[in-house]
Image: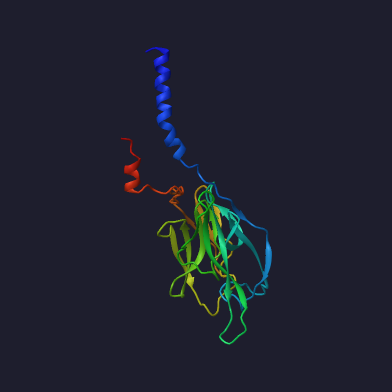
Length: 240
């Protein structure tokens, strides 16, 4: 094939591809930022389940996506992957009784959030047996270890949850739990060990207890934000 013929074919392919390239929208980026720290009043009266004894202030930060306030957060964030992180939500709750003057608000510690820097998506995490007043989560990779309280409120469990997994990786009873009379904190800081993968719990008034965790693959699925094509759109886009 001659040089002129080859150039003609290349030019024809480029001409045919041009409409497709022009119609392909560039991927939209998102700005996900945790703002500066501010301090708000905080008390056992305002958050019976979360405030520690003698705690009178809470440090919070705004979670901003594309410059817009999505949530208020508290504590340190933990990077799960190079694009996703977890951080604990803090809730501003209306504490006005019927007949009171409007405008009384209190802050309460809330659930953990999973934040995707690429899509800007913010998703509440459903951690098994998680109790805001008892559970202090210690993160490693996509695992969260904490002392949890069963739905009956009568048992304290050692729990290891995996982000977006349906069932906990570990759930072992530590002791009975008395909601009206229990140590504060109920458990000390949970510790992780990498090799072998092991987690150690420190329940108050008891000896520490360790469990080996069988390492598994991450179950977190990080989607892109591209919208799937509808059947009609897909049909219409096929070349004739």
